[in-house]
Image: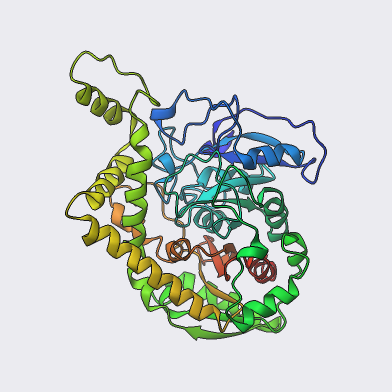
Length: 442
């Protein structure tokens, strides 16, 4: 395959008939597939073959989909460019010489290059929406709890969701219909109708529009934004690249011409969202990755010396630099004497972010911003400066902290021909609203 979109190029056929019987789907390599290697983009799991399917993979098979293989990704989902993979970087089919975004860059590249009709990615802080924006395709980050995480090799449990990537909003919505729904094996899943908030007027209006169609997401892709009220968080627009901002406002003008209206809103908490996100995500990662020790998972050590030394040697050999960096920072944040100073404060900031979003959405159907504040970076540009990579997530991480749904759709291109994405954020389990808004543009 071109673009290095796949780590394992192995087809998984389905004998079932269903809504995806004529579709091919690429699956990110941190989602378990029975009998097919699943590496998380890491040398640590180079030879790992899961004995079971993730729930979303089972649902793909039941829907008749053909899985084309396991896609490349930043190691354990830790990155924004798909350059930290142990299997080499993925190239951007929509912008040669530039990164495809991450960590689900392989999935987005496979769809953009036509190597798969659809794809699954995972989104911890923007890892579906970022590559969708950079590759000029559509990506949906569902509400936390809408899609089962059973069989996902997690980076950060409280933030991460599996989501669809597709060439159009309607196609992404069709894939979401297949993978969404409760799962007895994942206690975090829940019925949208049970968890939807009843605290504000606009959420109630949205519910009336969705009566009897909680999971009929494809039908919501009707492009009808007449009367839709869009909130625009000034904090997520002002700091973006000039070319991105120009493209964003052109797309807003397009939506206005179709009958939508907008007003600006303030989300003061997002100033601290990136810091809070990385403290929480790295802390959870340090706990999740403790199992990769050469005993349960990873290459077996020779046990020629002290066990602690052998354990450290396996992790030194198996993990890449970015993973080591995040595990170390997460372990530090959770250590005695620093838990309250960093982790607890990050959780307090998370509650503040959620409160801000809820207030903004009480007066808007959706919120809109550029998906990424910058166009796709050139290959290798951010590898020497991790902080630049972290700050590029400024517009996407707040949504994961608030556990809300969001979609990225193509908004246009810069003068240099680089894709720019538009992000729509909705209330909890308000997937139909973001799908409706996104379908007016893509």
